[in-house]
Length: 462
Ligand code: AMP
Ligand code: ZN
Image (cartoon, rainbow, N blue to C red; front, side, top):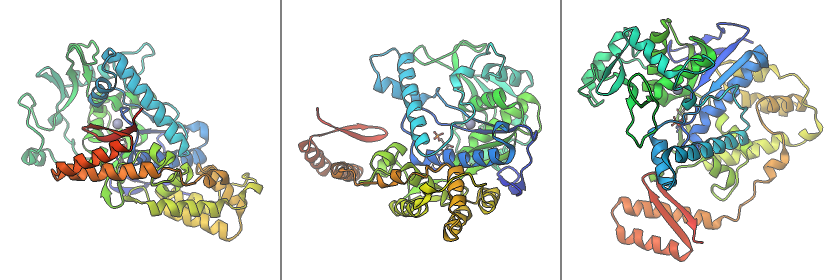
């Protein structure tokens, strides 16, 4: 079996060779913890979990280090903390939001059959120099300034993109092009519009750390440069995330890491999952088609979907392609699993991983072909091969988990969600008489609405 992975930077599928065969190193950008993870966020978690399992299979479980960070410093977190815990001091409120959200995230992705990564560093623990000497953000920024790749201006420290000849290579963008495009607001203090923030000042009521540049907080990109170096070193094998992270996030991570360490590359393979849409539309709170992982598991469209079915539904599409998330896809996934699980309880799962399953995955995670291979095992009656493959892939093999797919008597929830979507549409078309009428109808049902910038949530009146 030869493992091949598509690399966004070289734009080709290449045989995978670890830099150090005794230690395969992978970094994937993790969640910003301010709200429930949505089903799009589940995609990179599931995709890179499958890759993690495959790497462990090929190189041995002790020889793979998988780092996925938690972003627990971000202006969205601050806003959420102030909104949800107005009576607490901001730092306490922030801790409440990030701890609650991180725990929810862990529960959600565990239910989807994902292994925890080897380490899960939190950004706030890597801002200042550490007792253990692991790479931190302030030291990286100092190195960038010392090497002439960053400058202080307007109370910020900025990365000087013109100091790096091949800045823009990952995304395939030229600096000049970007200047001409000028969609990025030209801040007067920047030397070039693509220069990005490494450090910014915090006001008294924002979270901040004492630094050589005053009390402030890091930009987003520097976090991942610090945490990947802290656990994986200056260069490593695989860096992953969703397509939307290619620019600017990953481009900027590369710029920071290479320029701070003086290395010719950051990661040897850059992998990006495609985007997920819901029933053919971009998922967004204002369209009322925004689905969290938790909602799927506890009641979406009248059903509490088993984690196994969500996982299979995600893997039906190769990771680089866009996914159209549909109710029908979930229903088909439940049916497929109940066919596969039928009769498996008597089988042992001691068989080796069947070669056709491993080979499909080794071809840049060709999961549709892998699913075809699983159907083949079932057809040929190789139930022990099927069982060991499903176990390897993170499925529960638990038939009972599927039969729990009952109609949750959530007619009410479905009705409320429908009315809220109708009210949102009415408000968008400025039909306020209709939106008020729907609000009253919901109130009569005992439903209290809460509107915010992110959309509308509801609860039953107490
Ligand atoms: P965020 O918390 O927005 O930084 O996203 C966390 C991860 O989820 C990143 O790897 C994103 O690229 C990925 N992601 C966000 N939305 C989607 C989506 N609709 N489809 C696929 N991946 C997504
Ligand atoms: Zn990152």
